[in-house]
Length: 315
Ligand SMILES: NC(=O)c1ccc[n+]([C@@H]2O[C@H](COP(=O)([O-])OP(=O)(O)OC[C@H]3O[C@@H](n4cnc5c(N)ncnc54)[C@H](O)[C@@H]3O)[C@@H](O)[C@H]2O)c1
Image (tube, rainbow, N blue to C red; front, side, top):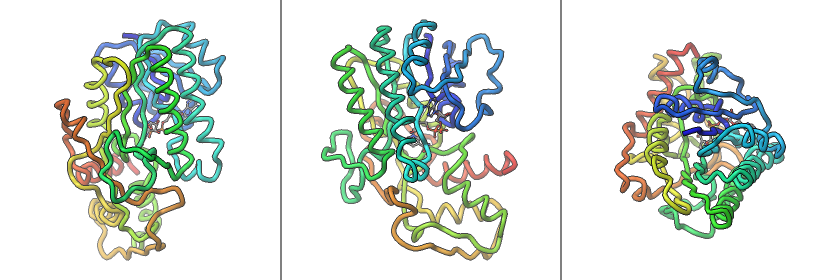
């Protein structure tokens, strides 16, 4: 297939691009390189890989890609992935997270492309700490601009599925970590400890607890679930089977892997790291498990492997 990966130069998108190419697809990657091009440099010169350095929220530029390329399916991975940055400047989420969805859907409508994968997020649920979240849990009230823009994207997709007979597979990712990750608690902690190995500032009270999925487990699930896009819209919560990992546990794993002892953990206090953060949530992932997919890593293993990957990469 000819596959458009929007946001294919990012952390998860580039891992997906590598796997799609390995499976024999031709990949058209469209990205404005917010994180640079290091994740796709190794693909330049590959005859099955085409790259467009483009602003995907811009309809004309996006239409041009659909006009130039014969596209069979779209994997929409483009978004602002830094929730705190969007918190300081909401227009980033409006542009990168919502308007990219609109222009891709319009491109699909005009050129008759019928298959869409969309990278959504647990942030669409907002704060429901006492609810086991299923794909049909209602009354969703996101607490970040990012979560709002993703939920609005899901709503737009639903309308295009109905109006244009598009088949859409939507995954609501938890925290995703692994090789090529560039931000988040693991990286903050490594950076801080490199600067001062005797103490570590931890945002919040350290009890924030979230599931962390290893990026290659996630990519495997995406490929499995999009072998056949089916009909209509399919939404999946995706996560690990094990309980989540607390922020304090992440700090412990980082210090262990860095070989540091007697590090003083200093908490900034409060039940969350920043405004818009959801300190804990609990997913029901029965639907995705019933497809036969199973993650290889637990949440703690995903964190530890990511720390090892980052240290091995010279961080
Ligand atoms: N990383 C996570 O923990 C996580 C969790 C939940 C959902 N997601 C979603 O998964 C997807 C991939 O996340 P990631 O962590 O790889 O993020 P990332 O920031 O590494 O990659 C996103 C890519 O999208 C590109 N992009 C953003 N806005 C664009 C625009 N307007 N035009 C063109 N390119 C644009 C960026 O340049 C970047 O390369 C995103 O949709 C994100 O919201 C990620």
